[in-house]
Image (cartoon, protein in one colour):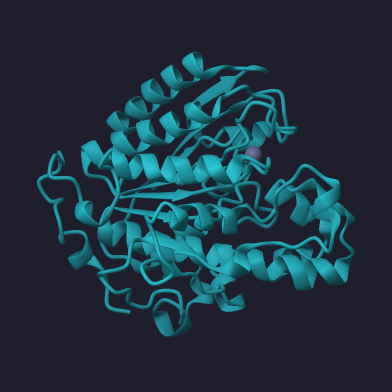
Amino acid sequence: MSCKKDNEGEGGPHHTELYGSTPKTSLPIVYHSDYNITFMGLEKLHPFDAGKWGKVIHFLKEEQFITDENIVEAREASEQDLLVTHTKRYLNRLKWSLVVATITEIPPLIFLPNFLVQRKVLKPLRTQTGGTIMAGKLAVERGWAINVGGGFHHCSGDRGGSFCAYFLFERVEGISTATIIDLDAHQGNGHERDFLDDQRVFIMDMYNRHIYPRDAYAKRAIKRRVELDWGTEDSEYLQKVELHCDGALNEVRPDVIVYNAGTDILDGDPLGGLSISPHGIVKRDELVFRAARRRGIPILMVTSGGYQKKTARIIADSILNLHHQGLIGPEREGLSSAATSPTSGPGSSGSALTAI
Ligand SMILES: [Zn+2]
């Protein structure tokens, strides 16, 4: 089950601060104000919102769904955590602005000088990554979790894009398979390269076929591939989401779903090239959660790409809709009672956790 034995001390998992216990009263929504990248004024010159994560939280507070006290504060992934999946060489590559701009899909980062990338961007990235790992554990315990950041799905280089799956495999007893549902507008070649020929991970990827990265080698890892054309609209898109989510989950029943909920599918996105409305995004997230919850499969959502000014409002609206639909919320902790697996149910997955 272990991924990289050379990174594990004395035969067990490496030490990490990311898997502490969380009060049962907290919602499994993970965030830290350190997620937000400040551009030193560059943000005013571009239509990119690299503070979207903080705004999502602001809107959720405004609607009184969350408070500072009832969500989970992310912790920064340490170098030791990152080395579970990344090589030192890869971590050094992150010092290049171009690499960071690519994996985050935030083009203005190219203009940041190296010392600012290190100071202003790597800490937010490490904190968001820590948040994804924490949310993975919470999803297994509670049936669902949302990291308000994370989802850097072009992250590979020397491999290691899907921290969450690696950590779950390493840490959580009973978690041996995962399905990644990647609905960001871009192909998720990072995690695909990670899991080429890895039978533990089933990847469904739905993306604009004409845009970056068009990584034919990585495509071999996709078990359910849905390629979209320029300007795809809501009705076709949502029909495909429903059809293929159900298809993927009927084909293989995973122990956990990692849902990459990129919002760069939104109409007008300068990178995505699709034409999905705000309502379409809300509906998409609902369809994915419904498919997971109906089957009683834990689901972790990360927010990934999409940085238009209105993106934060849409993500917040989507989370509120999931709550209104009864798909998430304090009253629905634990797995769905409609679970098809006889072994699932409130508490059962939590009790499978190894003591850390
Ligand atoms: Zn994207």
